[in-house]
Length: 319
Image (cartoon, rainbow, N blue to C red; front, side, top):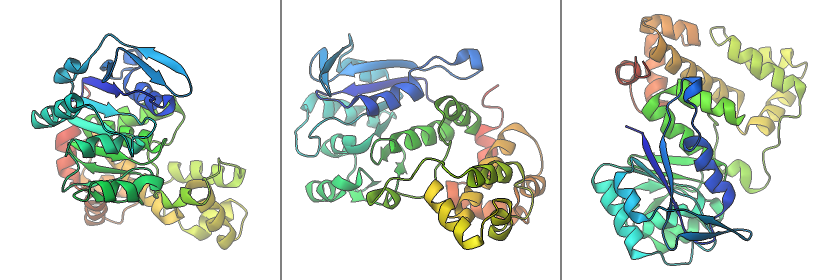
């Protein structure tokens, strides 16, 4: 269930990371046929919270609001990697998880979850600059610095800044299906799923789409997933050599053509499993897998569940 969402504000909260949570969960999109969330900003220290770079956010909600939340999000603030956190907040987070709520950290918001003991024995991530600090300060946490987010349901952690979008959309997709997640992503003008990890961002950011050839090929490939698609075919469509195309593709997407195609095929299979009664062989054929067994293998590898189990969980869930 995902209906009641609360974002916890500590002093010197970063507005972008808070905005990620507000954009995904705080906007009423019922006119578009999407679910609406009972969303609230919760002050953990005072009713008027300082935000970087110098404005304040007022909210009538205190920590008691967390008792009703299905999801509690922790956006980052200054010095989370060194500061202490209110004991009342940490206890509220522990109680929330104990009663079945989920928690989501954005960037170094993971330090709050770690301080509450919620990362002990769990895989987790944070911004690559602070991964070593998180591991050193909380040695019971299993820190994975190279990924964009980690799903250790009911605890979700994301890497720096925009990786919070990836984690939030993943959580929506997991609980409410790919149609909802994809529709929110389209409104935000972001990819519904990004492959690759943080390593692509450490030395340089991934550039925005600059090559019309690569962009047009991505669009074509999404529309022809049922066909056999090779790097040679894609590079020919882009009027590039295979080597040049592969290099530019990685620059634009942060991953390889093969991994990108695989991710798109799994996403397409998710939509078909949610919206149709087609057989597994038919779903496999329409999404470019050679047979149902290959579909099942990649589905389990990517999502940790079988196509049949996914269909049982999400078929008709939006009706």
